[in-house]
Image (cartoon, rainbow, N blue to C red; front, side, top):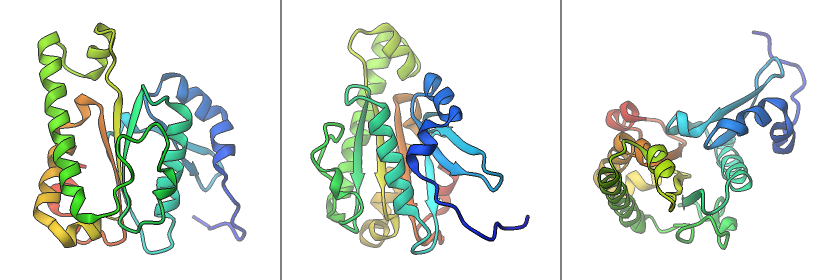
Length: 211
């Protein structure tokens, strides 16, 4: 592959106006644009099918920009009744501007010691959803929402820097993330996690296997 001598700006608006994205949003539950390939074609994906996303890259590579793109796109595409967000931002500056939007279930979490509580609450919600599905006799969130008048919203958890959380309470964070990654898909819980250091102590073997 020969790199282009000039780089071009890829704007979110252009991606969302593209025919690829317009086709995807008709059928996808959580459509997100990934950007443009080297040939100039637009790459779009459905986060609900992935079902989780791990973003790694050096400082300044654009991880936070990408998370912002995902969040911006989802809040434009989905109403608060269809999708709820949990945002974790130990850096305090990347995701805090979203405070106050109706999609957020809690204000953006910036204290690393509060994250374990948030993850435990999310696991509790996951098991509650499994219980409700069992009562109705369905296997996943799609079946439940087809049958029941009161719909369950999809839940998206975005963490901007996993390394900061793993430094404070690695064991608890790892266990919770693995649990959510294993069992969250059927209940409509999707994780988007970014880290600068995809080393073994941050993205452990268990986390990697389940993502």
